Length: 406
Image (cartoon, rainbow, N blue to C red; front, side):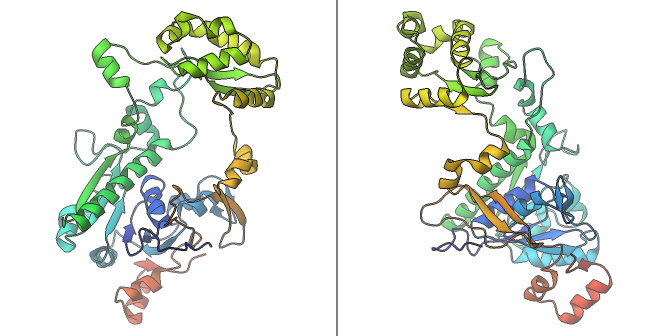
């Protein structure tokens, strides 16, 4: 794996990750990519369910290889008092704790905020859940898709008059995770620079989605307008849409800036529209958006997508193709930016994965370790935290911990 030339920005930060699946572990992955030591606690047996989600190679998900890179895997049964004591020992010396269980779960194990903040006053605890730690819905189970719906994203996604559709990813989980990472970094900064104590960050999946909704709420409050589904167009901003090309592909063209719109109309042979006073500004173009979409689509449909892209690039009009995973893997710009890297997993699979983002000029993150096998670090970590070989053997015998599973 690659090594950063400078010290990583989160070197020296210790994270204990109790979460499973997406929202919590994505936050742990992001912190680990930038140098944090992340100790992932997994349940005995199958471990984190993400290990077997979607497409597998030799029994392990390739998604796991992205989500759990740069982490150590420790198997502990948190339902057992002895397992809870192991967690306390690790958390006592941690900077950050990440969890995404249903509210009240950790409290039932004696691992709630009140207990842990007394154990470790400097602890920063990231709590991600469907509806947050408070409120009338706190006890409901919540996955990303539910957060996307309650947060308002699902309602505005899809074609007019059709059933609202979901984004083809667990975007609610990832948005919540990134909000959580921001909260962790803010809390660590406050602790270090302002001499503050630790604190917990309460992130709800629906809140993270809601935070992305731009002007939808004030538009409703001020004008009673509910933004509806508009397919591939962007409501209230024109012209910007997906237009058909001769080869059956769709091209995205965003001609919604005033000067950009003029260049777009000139280059497709419509100087009359370029110089129409009613179309000089966005509000006029919005009123005639259907006409503009017909004009632009009529021009693109007689040309290949590459021809359209070449013309738009020459005219400095934003345009692009709709990328599939194949397009990403083969694209020269992705390659030039180092966005895709190749790793070799623990089971010998050569695999292209997303590189570490964002890119920092002086202290870039790096992939230093591939995703661990279940429990492979259990004994090593427990020894570092003061457990003797005899204690570890007894815990293994009692099945409180697990180690070295393939």
